[in-house]
Amino acid sequence: MKQYIEQGKAVLGLELGSTRIKAVLIGADHAPIASGDHTWENRLENGVWTYHLDDVWAGIQDAYANLCKDVEEKYGAKLTKLAALGFSAMMHGYLPFDAAGNAICEFRTWRNTMTAEAAEELTALLGFNIPQRWSIAHLYQAMLRKEAHLAQLAHLTTLAGYVHWKLTGVQALGVGEASGMFPIDSETGDYDQGMVDRFDAKAAEKGYAFKLRDILPKVLMAGEDAGCLTAEGAKLLDPTGALEAGAPIAPPEGDAGTGMTATNAVAVRTGNVSAGTSVFAMIVLEKALSKVYPEIDMVTTPTGKAVAMVHCNNCTSDINAWAGMLRGFAEATGAKVSMGDIYTAIFNSALAGEKDCGGVINVPLFSGEPVVGLNEGRPMMLRTPDAALSFANFSRSLVAGAMVSLKLGMDILAGENVKIDSLLGHGGYFKTPLAGQKILAACLNTPVSVMETAGEGGPWGMALLAAYRIHKKDGQTLEAYLNENVFAGAKTVTAQPEEADVKGLDAYTALFVKALKAECAAVEHLN
Image (cartoon, rainbow, N blue to C red):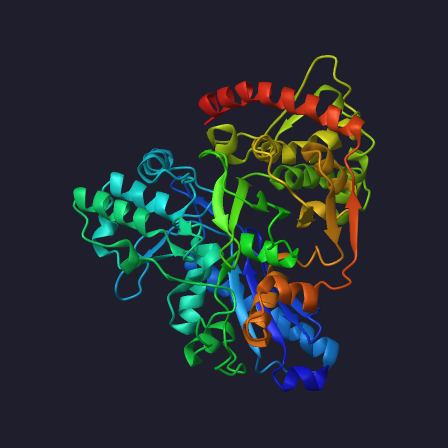
């Protein structure tokens, strides 16, 4: 392995998630051989969820440096060159730049729910659901507010696109990531031209001279040439100067596209659920839905196939908060427990709770949740006076509550008779074996599988896309490459929905929906 790495044959994938930036290096069999990460958090500044761009580079450099340390410790090798690499990040958001490449306002992340007016107007204008977090919704909201920075707008991108641009000089996005900026025509694999024309006409009416195709990144399919690592880019990634320039880079993708890749869910009738700080389900469709649903986003796979996406802003943040409190309680008693022990106790105890959580209800909304119609959130734990407040019921309400918003969106797809042959879970929610998996299977009333590689997640998925960029045979599709080269013989564990669990969580969901009235009151009065 030392020789393999030093000869520059390894492939790198790096993903900027909501709470962690992680780099993964893969070998000839596509399995991870080393990794490094960096923990970070978004900031709420002047009512806007954001990350500072200086923090982006500090985090990327730290994650890469930790990867290099891991390589040296495991193999005694120096990482100086790569066969290929790729960068992905949390989807959506708003990163506008002027002609000189300077940011002209703060980075507005996917977590913001400040664009309701724009999303509603654009959905009507385009006849296509435009979620609040999409880049085009942020742009149009800035236009409605007549924000001064628009006079300097020359280029608009996402976080993944920004990193890729700085490392290659190429302003481009993978089609899956681009589909979170503006609607994609799956027939052409590019922005929908009719919708582009309608938006440009509306912008002109409002006095704006820019054209969408001039400011949006070029759209690329998985496997296409997206440029190479420049000398400046190599120094940005590795300030020590050890990393050589020249390695080909894959089209940058969002965490949705890398999640689909990492779970081999890029073919029709496959799907995956990525569950961490946020949660989203991606189902590759056989045919279009019968109408526009505000709860369902239409995006694409990294090869441009139509995907129905249910995205929820809130998932494990409240579990994390309660876990931290419980660790504080344990330490106050003199007990020594790790956070891993606490998470394991919560998830395993959730399986022992009453099927409907015994009257204990958790509404885990840290931020707004468009799927349930809320622009702000207030995390709440409620219970009826006769509720059985056991640790098991408390735990089940946390683990199930994290999935209820997703369930409400997925119920719409069930009503559309969308067929799913396989649904795979990945992300921190599935780290405790079977626990989250069983509860999600009951919530969605469908089997949920988890692969051995589920814990690798998005950065591994990005590394696979980078490997596909350089190793694919002529005419070999991404689906075929993954089936033949990566997932042949992959081990999975499948949880089937159990009738009692399904009924119990249906009852819990009904209580959760009723509790949203209390949530609305909390948003109104607790500022």
